Length: 80
Image 1 (cartoon, rainbow, N blue to C red):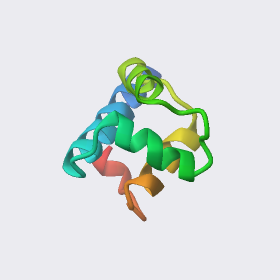
Image 2 (image 1 turned 45 degrees about the vertical axis):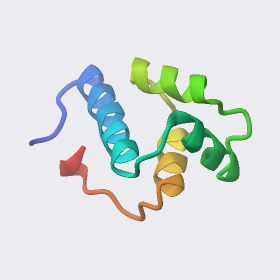
Image 3 (image 1 turned 60 degrees about the horizontal axis):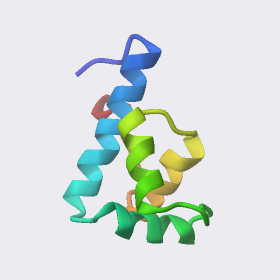
Image 4 (image 1 turned 120 degrees about the vertical axis):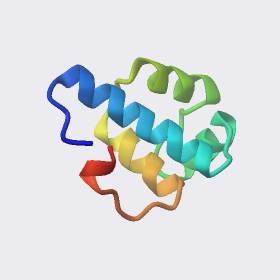
């Protein structure tokens, strides 16, 4: 797929990557929010998760906590 070339491309690809992994795990945003609360994000709700992924902008801590909540231990940059 090649590496992202712009900030907008990086944001879009990171967001789509998470959306795809959430779908693969067959989780709702409410399910994910509950898991994120276990991983250091106590204020996450289904709506806040949805909005972050829709905007495509979120902190690295959200990205990493989402990976942990999904049980993903590694990610290849080329997959994003």
